Image (cartoon, rainbow, N blue to C red; front, side):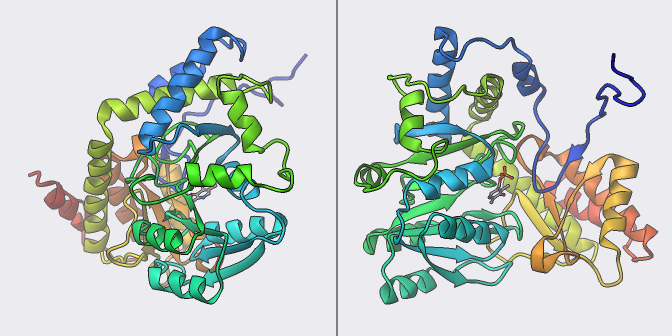
Length: 395
Ligand SMILES: *Cc1c(COP(=O)(O)O)cnc(C)c1O
């Protein structure tokens, strides 16, 4: 017997998710999740695995056939991308300008890598010159960098970094957890060697899988390893044989999450990647116009703002948690607060995948105006929504 008063049925009404992830999930993806579980070596499931790999490679804009989802969240993708390519004593350079760069550096030390970091400023990009300077002083086997730094809202240009790492013979590992599906992640064109992502940001799937892609250069590095990969579960060579023709049993894939990812990728490619990127820019521009018109100041470096994660400074005297609670209680709307050194200083407003819509932009502007007024912060009535309408060119 279970006492329903103590252990009630889950009956969440859901939320409008406009934070740093998860984002709202398309009803078609939820439907795919509830399809019957079948065996992971069943021919029907094997076909879905293959099609999922194909669509993932298209999403990464790569011809790498080594493209699979890792069973775990974005952080498992990060760990996979590092633990497989670092052997004890390898020289690793990590670019840090936010929380996720810090996490990469932590993992490098845990794998026994000889770590060097470029300590950038939170809210600014890492200048490619800085990377070149660091590599000239001390060559590295691997360079790690975050594409869209979710803790600050900065979108890092990768192409110049790819040119530098190639010139200095280092592998480039890129964190595309937040950018994939929302901004171009041009793996081949921009010279990225290993790239990982997560399902709950711009792919608009529940959290639980971490897509990863590995190019030939990185594969050679795997083949020349002297030691076994320290992690058994995240050993990507074994994972590849599980996802490949061999179908070598490694673990049981989270069947329904693969269905969900497959459906979310189908939705992405129905819309088209370029149209999807344009949609993220359109709504982000309208949101930023609205926030600015309300007298708020954007946090991330101008010219390098990630469209799917808009960071805005909290005005002096306004209570961070109070505003977020107001939005959640009155509108079922979630936005994110700051982390680490910028905790209490910024809000992070996500426009990721299925959450990136005109309705959501208008709702967050109107409700934020109300929440700020509730705190005694004066905003010209309707200024945010009016500026967004202007940006959308609607009456
Ligand atoms: C969310 C995120 C991660 C971690 O992903 P989890 O799914 O939370 O493990 C890593 N890097 C970036 C840039 C992220 O935004």
